[in-house]
Image (cartoon, rainbow, N blue to C red; front, side, top):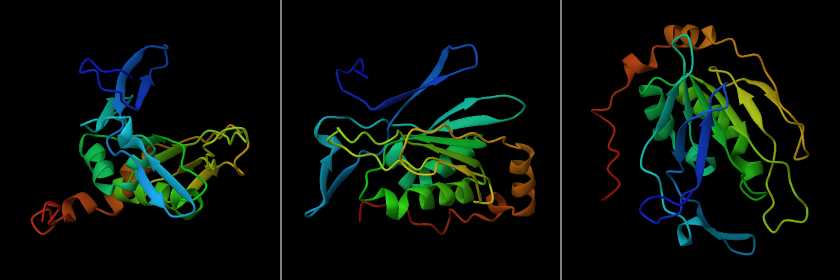
Length: 192
């Protein structure tokens, strides 16, 4: 997306059941990686970072948090989306074949646990003719961190699951992480 500030953003539209764009999320964390002899990729060379956690109301006291790809690496963003009311966290993204096998489904499960929320991690299928190879392996995870549906691999596939949204409040009542958090102890200042 070309912003009003003439910067280019990796942006995900959020479309409601009537086909109307109700919000957009600009990727917050830009993927800059240099693994010698494997992959070099710097989004910051062409893209600008977004600056907010995106949460949109859904229905019946539920809300959808949206972040993009590499944003999934950051627990703080998942926690921020939960703090803004998200019960479902959706991460469209295209992890690569170097970091994907190591972390993609693990991160989806971790973010479900962090936010005590459902997580939908949706990846494109791999295109063998592309210079960038997506890992694939889309997954849907429940608030306990248990996969409820996942793609069999990197081919085209539609992954579907019925989400029992009551599970979110059940998990949050059983493990009251929000009441037990200690922000007074966590030093998240990374400037030092």
